[in-house]
Length: 249
Ligand code: 13P
Image (tube, rainbow, N blue to C red; front, side):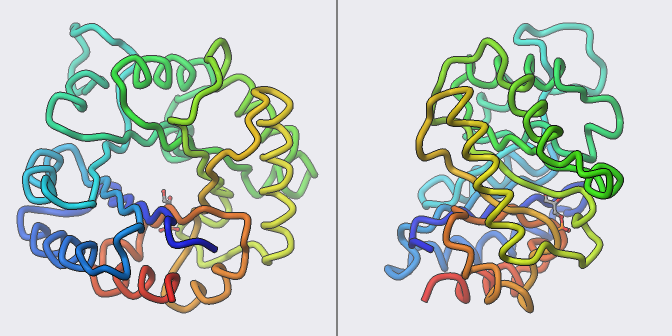
């Protein structure tokens, strides 16, 4: 595991005005020489994006949105925010294809449109893929990952602005995690799919699903991953900082 690992905090529908204090502590950590190369990305709810960006402006901490609308142009889409609006407040990243959004209607086609629109707005993408428990039990994991990648990236030219986030759905928020050797195997399958489809040799792949301070020492042994997409544990600043500290030593 290298020093320039990603630690992406997905706060989901949590966080309020008081949460700014958490970010301040992480910004302080990011200025420490030891963590200079670490890539920290905060993805708070939309309501905090601007606030977090202003705080982190002169630091290595980057801001990302948790989703975006597919339409590049403004339009009559009540409750939605598109890539252009996200970019306009200074965010650099957007999470697309999270399973919690796939459950509520984001299919591979829609995800493909969102990725195109985010790339056109010069955002970097955290592209979530992963199988459900049922798919895993039915030995469909590899074909699901293949179809999520191939359809999600349809008609998109090879580029380095997409970070792949492997998040097995059965691991999100459950405390269940893959064994290291199974995770290594899945990462290698994902790399092969990307290589076949895009001829991209070294894609960035992060892991997400129940990462916490107890299991991070074990996860960091998986040398093929480039970092972590962290939900629950990232909402507690001390835990988030400890995860970063334990990963880089
Ligand atoms: P947890 O870390 O809470 O399992 O969530 C993972 C996740 O969904 C990050 O996007």
